Length: 404
Image (cartoon, rainbow, N blue to C red; front, side, top):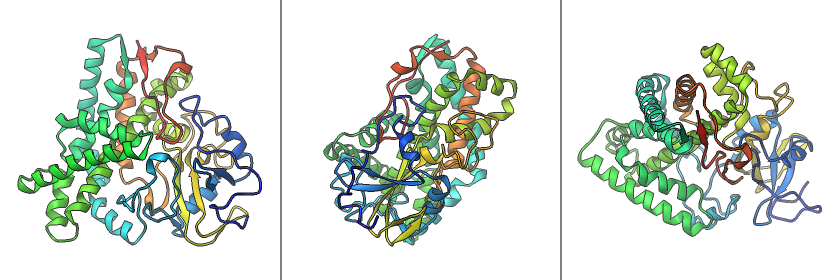
C-alpha cells in the first residue's frame, strides 16, 4: 500500500488490539491476522490504520532498524489506548526516545544491570520468596497468588535495587496500577503526578542522605558530574519502578497458571528441576506478557513484501512473532523441552529490556520454589473465571485464586 497510515484504507481493517479470552493465549481472532502474512493492516481505536508485524524474522529485523522510531513525544506517534492521548510532548527516558538520546541514557544504567549484580541479588530474592511462601502456607489452603506472591516478589526486588523504601510499596503499586490501567488520560495523568511527586521527594532525600542503591549511584556518578539532570533522574526512577515490577508480576502469574494448566510439563520440570531456566524461556515465548510494541516509521522501509511509508504506525506483535511457525515447530504447543532463547519476550534491538537478567532471576526462583514448596498447587476456580487484563495492557491475570 502507498497511503500513509493516517488515511483510511480502501477495505476495512480489523480492530486492534483485542482482549484475550484465555490468559496465556493470544485472542482467537489473531489467528486470522498471522494467516495474512508477516505484515497486515489493523485499525486503532481512533480510526488510524497501522501495520501489524506478525512474522518473527520481519519483526526482529524491524526492531533492530533505527528507521523505526520509539519517540513518544513525536506529534504523530501512534496512540493505541485513550489514556495516552494528549501526552503534551512528555518523553519517557529509555523506552520512549531514540538514539542518540536513548544510547546516552542506556549507557548510564548498563553497569547497574550486569549479570554479576543480578547474581548478587539472587540470595535476597530467594529469602523473600521463601518468606512469602511461608506466609501463604500459614494462612492457606487458599490464596490469591497475585497479591500474596507474584506482586511482592518483583516489588521487593526493584525496591532493593533502587533503594526505594518497601514500606511505601502499597502507595506506588496502587499508583502504578492506576497509571498503566487507566481508562482515560485524566486518570493516567493523576496517577503519574502522584508517582512523580513521590519519586521527586525521594531523590531530594537521597541527595541529602545517600543510600546504596542504583538511584544513589546515579546521583553520585551522573547528577553530581552534570551528566544527568535531577528532573531526568526522577523520570528514570519512574520508568524503572514501573518496568521493574509491572511486567514481572504478570510473568510470574502467567507462568504459574500455564504450568498448572499443563500438568505433564510441570511433572517434567519436577523430574528435572535443572530445567527451570529453559522452562522460563518457553513461558516467556508462550505467554508473551508484552503483547506488542509501538513504533513509527521515520523513513520508507521495504520489509516482508510491503512498503512502510514515513509516518506509518507500526505495531510489532510480540505474541504472534513468538507463535510464528517459521521460527518454532508446533508454536502453539507449550513445550519446556524446546530451545526458545531467540524469543522476543524482552523485545529486540536497542530497546531490548535492560532488566531482563533481573526478570529471569526472579522467574527462576519464584516459579522453581513455588512448585517445590507447594506441589499440590492448583486453580481454585475454572480457567474461564480467572479475571484478566485488557488487550492494550501488559497481559496477565488480575487475580489468580489457587488452592492446595
